[in-house]
Image (cartoon, rainbow over all chains, first blue to last red; front, side, top):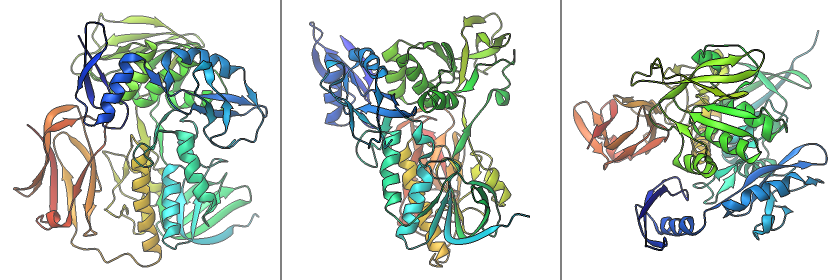
Length: 116
Length: 418
């Protein structure tokens, strides 16, 4: 069986064609112009991960843009949004400060995207 | 009678978005005194509301969010001796490079030796494409809705239709879905999607939001607020096909239908604009038709990647500093850059520096298995290997001096099958 999708690692946007075995596991990939494409394809088959970006409320009423430090399972993003919606943070904060450690039990921290 | 404050600087930069900041830093590095004039009360430009990631992949080799990318440059700006004037609105720029702006302290006249235009662009509106129907509340450009949600903490609506598959519309589809709003679908006039594949995947497929190609909004329905839109399929001439109308209930219509460089100030300064880009015609120093007035970023031509904006702005900033300091080398033999066929435009339009040239261009429609040819008169002086071209990806061509030596007084770019 073959699945196809685009790699999102860099602006090249290689069109990846992934061959799966009978059990649905990764067998081979073609279309990638570098080895990062293979790593991307393997991860996408096993468990799609994405960076989450959103805003959280500050006590002064402003919004602070936040991001997950790295990609984490897409199927945890809804739960992550719910956890972040309940926050009301005290500033001042600097870019990179942790606003919620290990969001949605993913082990990945949410950090500030800019100075508040 | 109020008095006019008069100040002067070597390089005046209009706008403190990614283009303006990068240009200012490079100009300062080259030894010029630099003043940035920014209408907002904070620097960062459009990046402040672009909270998603995907920025800096080339420039920093990291995947940053818009605010992170901006913050890195803002930190450098604060550490430099560039003068940053916030909450200051430029009203007029003269060909003699006098910049008149309004600020908290009143009207200011800034006399500059060189100017860098970095005002960015605005969004195409409903009126410009004349969508028929009721004139009701709930019709926004996608970028405006992005500002409402990401900066003002306002919810623009509950159930959305998005017209246009450009990146802003796709990014907003995901943002709305993440914040618990309903997205009925994204509708695209052309038979192909306009945005990056990355965004089709991460913004639509991840959230099960349908993309309808060759379909457009033909009527807006409602009394005081949007209640529904009528969508219709279009034929190969982009004309709505009678009988294909469907009513989609919604309370908000977001328009992601194009960006237009913001060149009112440029026109006032006598800068010649290219009708294909709506941005200034520039040479390879990024200098416009008015000596000493340079342009970069979205005001020059609409970009897809902020990394390219930074590179372009650095070029404009160093050119402006050199001009201001009287160090710009005398122009060499000018070579006009033309384009034909499927290539919509090139930046720059003219090569004068004699240095290696980087020419940027876009195609008007997707072209698979084509290559680029550069001709001078009848002579083919360069061709690339076969690849695919998309209108949504800005391409570039490097022309070393050795190659340019073979050119006459003009070169023409074209994409050819095979």
